[in-house]
Length: 455
Image 1 (cartoon, helix red, strand yellow):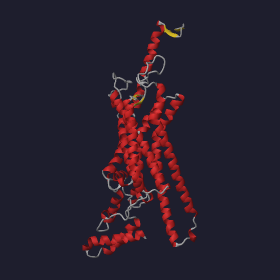
Image 2 (tube, helix red, strand yellow):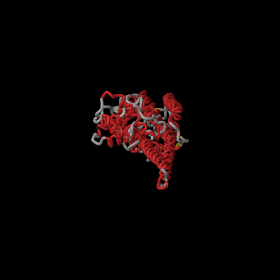
Image 3 (cartoon, helix red, strand yellow):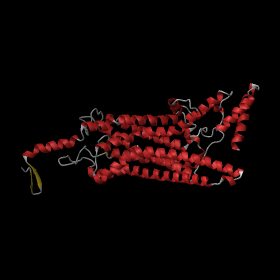
Image 4 (cartoon, rainbow, N blue to C red):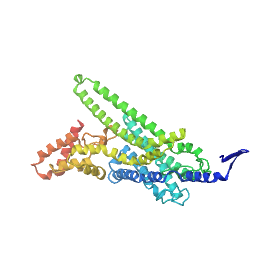
C-alpha cells in the first residue's frame, strides 16, 4: 500500500502515515537512549574532579609555597596559568548535570537528574571555549623549552616577552567565549553544552523541526573556527618543537660520545665534564617536555579525530562521545603527575625511607622539599641547617635549573651532594671548638664551599 503520493512536487501525507511520522518525529526529538545520556553526563563527575584535584594541587603549590622560588621560573608560571584555565574547565565538566537543562526547560534532552537551564548551559559552553587556552599554554611551554635548549635563550630574555603571550591568550579565548555566548552558539548537545544546533535534533532527518539557530550544515565550520582549528595548530607546534628538542639532545650526546678522552688535557676534561652535565640536564628537560605533550595529546586528540570524521564522513558514535567525556577533563590530573615526577624521584633517592604518600605531600605542601630533606639530614649531625644559607648562584638558563634533575642534586642552585659532604667534614673540625663561633663558622664554611664549587 502506497502511503506517500507526489502531486505537483508536493508531498501529501495520507491519514495512514500520520501515526508513523508522529512516532518518527518523537524518536528524533528524544535523541540518544537515556542510559547513554546519563553515562555521558555523569562520567565527567569522576574524571573532572580528578583534574580539579590535580590542577588545584599545582596552583596551591605555586601560590602558597612557591611565590619566591617556583614562580621565578618561566615554565612554572606557564604551568600555573594552564592549571587555572584547566581548573575552571574541569569544574564545569565535572558538574555537567547541574548545568544541563532540566526536564521541561527549553533545550532539555531528557538527561536524568539534570538541574540547569539554557543560561547555565551556555555558561558551561563559555568555560569549555576558554579551556582551549590550556592548549595554547602547552604550546608556549614547548616553545620555551625549544628556545632554551635549541636556541640558548636565557630566562631573562624570555621573561621580557612572556606577559605579551599571557595577554594574547586571554584576549583571544575569552573573546571567542564571549562571542559564542552573544551569538547563542553554545547549546545543549550530547554529553555537554557546547557548539550545537538549537533546538536539539533539529533538521536531523525527515519530520525534524526547523532549526531556530545554527542548522547542522553550519556546525562543522563553526566548530572548526571556535575549537578544532586551535587544537590542530597546537598539536603541530608541540610535535615539531619536541622533535627539534630531541634532535638537539641526540646530536649533542653523539658528539660527546665521539670525543677521545685520552688526548684531552685536564682543562679540556673539565670542559667535557660540564658538557656532559648539560647534556644530561637537557635530556631530562626533553623527557619532561614530552610528558606534558603526551598528556595534552591524550586528552585532546580524541575530539579532533572524531570532529574531522564527523565533518568529512558524517561519522557519529556514542563511543566517540564517551572517549571525549572521559579524557578531555583529565589533563590537570596528568599534569600533576608530570609536575611532581622529578622532585619525587630526587626525594626518594635522597631519603629512601620516606613513604610514597609522605613524599607526595612534601612535593605539594612544602616550600622546598629537597632543602627540607637535606637540612634535616645535616642538622642531625651539625649545629646548623642549610635552610638558612643563601643559594650559591641564581640560574638564568634552563640547563642550570635543578627542578628537572633526577640524580639527587640540590634544587635550584643549592649546595650539591659533594658540597654537603665538605660541610659535614668542616663541621666535625669545629665540633670541639667554642660554640660561640656561631654565624662566623657558617660564613667561613659557606665561603669555602662556594669557592670549591666555583672551581
